[in-house]
Length: 386
Image (cartoon, rainbow, N blue to C red):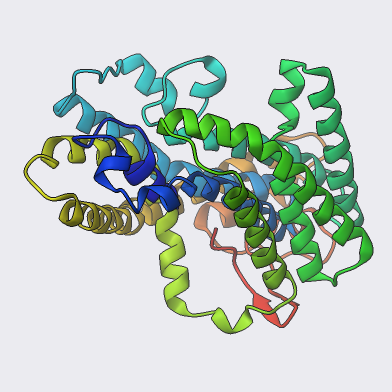
């Protein structure tokens, strides 16, 4: 959806004419592709809640860093290199801005993003930090997850009412409803649906469909043309219905291996497709028909995403994970109150990447490297792939 929005509907100026002229039929459905971000936020709430279960804050942090940064670092450098080698008239990238982009903090620091799609990563980071508050201490429980959803929703509504920029940055009053709904859907899946969870999901839908009016206005500003609002509400309802189908176990027969492979490509595809794709379009649109160029470009981006996943993301994530776990073991061993006798063994085991033997309830057990599989809704979850 997002790729179609950026290539077919967005007013990038890459094509020889306006999208409505180049794609007279396809530009209308592609004009709603920006909603793919909202669906991703909802999926993120579901999967982050799933991946946090049985993990401490340290392991949660390691899982998020190793998931987000390897492909992101490569994409920032690759996109910057492509833009520097084949710049357009309006392309400006400064080396100091590229350096800040590697931290993923360019949005709050007011630095130009190497690629415009990176704004969503700052939203994700803030969600992770908020959810880490639930994981800290006694760990994630059913009651704590529900309480977090309720408190976050009311706090976001207050933030919207007072119009305080600091509260907006922390509480995400426009985007929090998708994360909260995703968490509620996962709690339905792990346990069972009940009235509290359905009320949470319904409330999130009602507020989200209102917030999408402003979001669509911003999207139309980027596209340069207006589209009806009712398909936006219909698509949002379909997103919630699809997540409900997952939560109720209706999609368990769709567990095909190719879906896992396709899912692995979505993040690197998202990171690399926009600016590089526009550059390719702008340099070849005059010589190649859009009907040929567009599918070839999408296929090329998918192939590139696969190469990034296999050659960069997987090996770098493994090395980064081992290094972070070794560092976490050192920090725990040197912290006041740490078990002195067990620390060297734990440090050696973490450095070697081996599981640690520990009795139930021990500090080592609370930081197990691999979460135990669990049965939920007919599925057997093992290691989180996200």
